[in-house]
Each structure stands twice: as C-alpha cells, then as structure tokens.
Image (cartoon, rainbow, N blue to C red):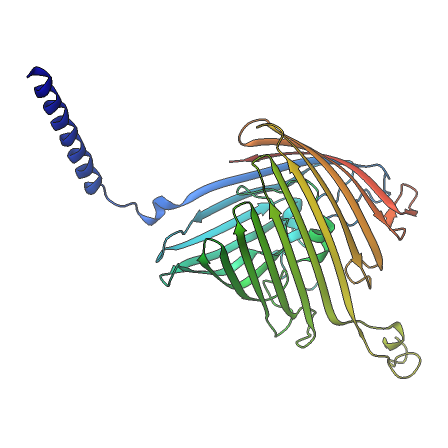
Length: 394
C-alpha cells in the first residue's frame, strides 16, 4: 500500500511539474526581431616568404597572399545578421571586412574606384536582405551584394574557411569574387536545390555596361557522402560592351566517405567573346587608323583549369591537406601571358582551441613561361613559397 501510494504521489508530482513548465513556456513572450540579431567576428594574420626573393616583394599570380616577407593582416571581419530559416521570415546580413582580402575583393563602384581601379583596405563584402516566400519548400530571396556561389574555394569568414591558406589559380584567375543583384534559391528536396540570379556582373556594384548577367547553380546530393555542384554565369562583362558575352561553367564534386577523409575536385571553363583584339587592328596614335589596312576580326579569349585536394583529419586537433591544380590561360586574357600554370600545396593544420587555428602553407608554382620575378628583376619558371597563417573565429 505504501509503495502504491508513493508511486501515485510521484506520478502526480511529475504531471504537475510538466503542466507548470508548459504554462511557463506558453506565457513566455516571443523574441523581438532585434533579439534575433547575431554578431560574429573573424580575424586572420600571416607571413609568407618567397624563395625567389622577388625585387618587387610581391608574389606573382596570388589572390590574397601577395606580399612577400611581410607580417600582415589578411582579414578582420565583422558580421551582423538576422538569419532566416523558416517560411515567411525576413532577415539580413552585413559583412564588413578590413585588410588584404578587402583590398583585393572590393567591387567596382563601392570601395573600388570605377575610373582608377584603386581600392581601400576596407570593403562591404556582403550586404543583402533575405525573405523566404511561403511557397512549397520555401523560396529564398536575397537582394543586395553577396559572395559568388561559383567555385570550390571561397572568401574565408566566421562561417567557413578553406583547407589551404593560399588560394588556387582557379579562385584567383577563373571566377568572380562577388555579385550585386537578385538571387533566388529553392530546395526541391533534401537531394536537389537550385539557385538563379540576375546581377550586375563580376565584382560590380556599379555596373560597367547596360547589360545584366545571369547565373544558374545546382546542388545535387545523390548519396549522403557525395555532393555535386554545377554553376553557369553568362553576360557581357567588359566596359561599355552590351553584346559580347562572357561564359563561365563551373563544376565541383565533394566526397566525404568518413569524418576523417574529404576529397574535392573542381573544374572551370571560361570564354569572353571577341576579347582578343589583334595588334594590327588597334588604331595608331598618329593616324587613328589601324596599321596594316583592314582590321582582322577579334577572337574569343578562353581559360580553363582543374584542381583537386585531399583532406585528412588525422586527429581532432590536427589535419593534413594536399592540393594540386593546372590552369590554362590560353590567350593570356586572365594573366597577361598565354601560359599553362601548375601548382602544388601542402598544408598542415593545428587547431589550438575551437576558435583558434594555426597552419602552414608550403607551395610551389610553375609556368611554361618565365613569369615569376627574381631578386635581380629577371624572371623564372617557378615560384616556391612558405606561409604561416593564424586565424580566429568568434
């Protein structure tokens, strides 16, 4: 009898506690929109030594790690956002960046002068508003400036960083950094999502012509460890040219068979129509007439590349990453020299704390043309560098 009564008392106490808890939750007022705003930060610093000891103290054909023999701030970034996840939600995101990354990735017409092309060490890297239309699985609408969906690598931030410190030639030379315009994303199911966008073009806040560019991005996950990305961007990109399209096709495959191993392959092909103008068709300064009489027709500029990397998460705190790639600037449109570039990079990574990461970047670049500067100003076919990078995420 005492055991039976004890059970009833215990059960009754549990029910009362549950009712009281539910009542408290029901009485709790929903959070205001400003209480849903989050603040995050990211910082990165590095040192890179170029074994060629270039006379200019610059590493050639690099995106952000262009300074040789200099301790520098790569990026200091502050992100303010109200994220959206459910249908009918409004939100926004603003990324303010400082440092070398900001100077290189700044878009025309914002923190890059449209006339001189000069930029500052500050950039509004992203600034867009978002809304999820309550349609089907939810149609996400983003309007403003956002990073490109193209490519396997991206601009580092609090919500993600690349496996290697230095960027590949594909990231540096084959694709844009950011876009300004309208982006629509729809997840059809957990295996397939599509994005379409209409934008000012490549890295333009203030457009350089009257035409717009459009893009399509597909994300396919046929199996849990395998993801396939397909992207296309097309539109006129040269100054005051509204007809000659620049086409870019990008494909990527990410395979993660186990939490320890990750394999990535990325390929790009680009073409800019009528971008190569023969020298004989350029008007001379004294006569204003092309040398040699009739002007030969302009030809299309093309570039292509493929890159792959392997990441091994040996322990919770240590990882080793290997990357290799080849890039063909068929007409010299992207680098100024018609050449084939090869690159190999080894990156050991140590996570000191959950937010602090230190890594090395041992890399060698090679070209079939002499394009890499030496200490005496002459050029050679290869460029070996060693970088040390520390980054912190808050």
